[in-house]
Image (cartoon, rainbow, N blue to C red; front, side, top):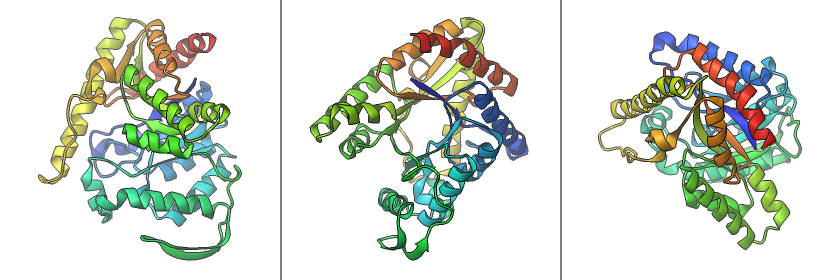
Length: 343
């Protein structure tokens, strides 16, 4: 099982944006030093929920200040990007990182409608824009004299420069919040990123994904490779004792979820739908893993038993102070990961 740090730093106000962005870069560098497999970057706009805002720009800073850690998008809100520009940015990032990019794509936010309004994009177009952009990316990284005449984009270009380092292109993975989205990726033989779910739902979804790939005609080796490149999201806080982890982790988690809901209530229009409450992402029991290194290792082992290839771990939850988060991250890398590797 692979382990990645999901850099999703919240900034409570515009006054703290600069500090939080700087601390997020330092956290990426620490993750590299500690030997984690990947650092994953989100994309959200206008609300402080993801302080660095743009994963492509922030990835460039990580690429030149780290040595070995892979850099993934979880996910780039594809509906908000022009595909040619995104293709160029990813190619340059692949060069700067010497081939460490993972391109996670998604339709864009499901409930932050103000992000679409801010970019002048109709959210009803998001899925179609995602599919068209993805088709363009696969072609543009490999073709010369490429001409595209689609519903949303029309262009003709001679050749993308610079080219990507990874051939034929960096790994591309889809965000899949629903079961149907995951199974659509299975039918295409593509890996997926899963949002926060219970262990039982995660296991059921991975099993359904494998079964659907088999029904689509993929052999066992292809299924194993695809599953090995599927990642699931968890929120994790590690401390020296269970009591300390609960004392710092639970309030940070609840504050984070409250702030997210408050931003949507403040910035969405009254007619724009809000997510249902009570999901795993809002539940301390299902949405948060916290405890001593031994406790977290035991809980993470259950995640590993679902068959997922990797875990995207959000460590710095909401207002969690940097020094507390760094200690959590160090405990995870130095005391949790060795137990899981040996298991």
